[in-house]
Image (cartoon, rainbow, N blue to C red):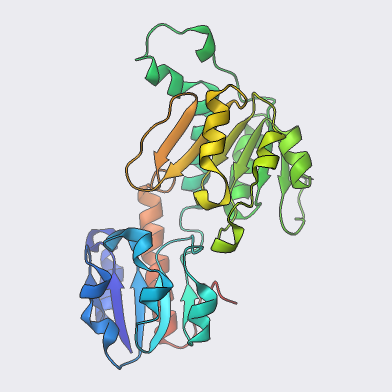
Length: 307
């Protein structure tokens, strides 16, 4: 089985490079999808990819391209997110899909809490005012006593909840299935109305486009905050930004693909690498990514997202 790895060579641990070399893996980085010759050969293959190492990044792997790969046994992603991959269509041609779960749980949750503090202390407004003497609109607030609502109580959502709770917040949540937890479950309309901050941390896919509707956003208090560490397809980014600018919402933190163009107001737009970009994340990614590739080669695939 041919193993094709598309990932920055400097992002691997030395021991993982050795393991992949032992498999005879072919390495690429900073390359276009079309330039990978092995994708069109007849032999069975694994495509193990970090989208950031491909020209076009996440947009470089649409179904119209993936369908052209001959005899693809598995697509192994070096990401936790996988919503941008059409898993059903890949499965229909016999391809399994794996990811790197848990590689950045602590880093993403800590980054989310930093975004919460950033909005509470109105750092975007201070930056826009060139850090001049504080004016009334830029007076900050404390985190203690906040009612924090988490949409998606998975690994990241749970860790974010723990950090907030340790800092004096009251935690509420919504999840597709109720969790065994001391946190209070609320349906989405009630959660958005009740909480001072909404944290979005659920797995996305194309079918969830618009899941966080404008109607839900309109239920929020004008001082409330939205913090997102997920794909922007689930909400109307422009609508939320406009509400913040008009003073109808307290603040908004979100990830931006490509060049970040900060908006005016209490809006914290960060590169999509901001939340996970730590040494710990990349060491975990290298290990989990390599273990997953080896498991597919051995016929015992781990970390599948399609079953």
